[in-house]
Image (cartoon, rainbow, N blue to C red; front, side, top):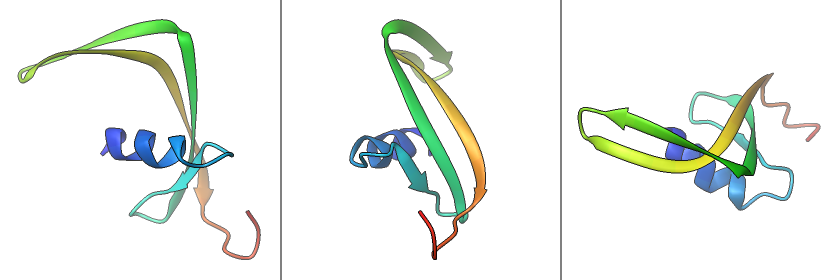
Length: 62
C-alpha cells in the first residue's frame, strides 16, 4: 500500500495523493537520507520519507 502511495505521489507536483480510503496524504522524500526496512520477506533500502495524513479529500479544493 505504501509503495503505491509513493508512486502516485511521485507523479504529482504537489506530492499529495488521495488513497483508496478517501484520505489525503502528502509524501515528502529526503533523498539525502536512506532507511532500511526489514521484514519476513526480506530487506529493502530506500530514501527516507515522511507521510502526512491531511484528512479527507476536498474535491472542491486541492
